[in-house]
Image (cartoon, rainbow, N blue to C red; front, side, top):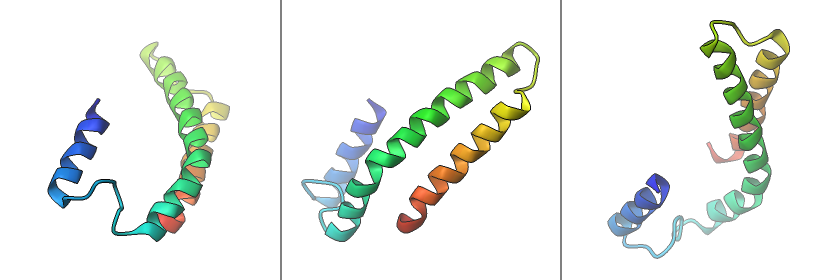
Length: 84
């Protein structure tokens, strides 16, 4: 809901019909990258959920979970490299 509101606001301000209408190369890059990055985002959400659950019980996420979480951050950062 917040995303839709933000997109609508940006489009109203820019006067464009779609996001990145003035930057078709960047839009194409996003379209190519997003399906792969989306999987990484979903994995990261699950890992964050598990880490927070461990913290809620007063514990720390185990070493393997911490490593996987850091790898998900690195994977998303690598996916974003071409877009800044």
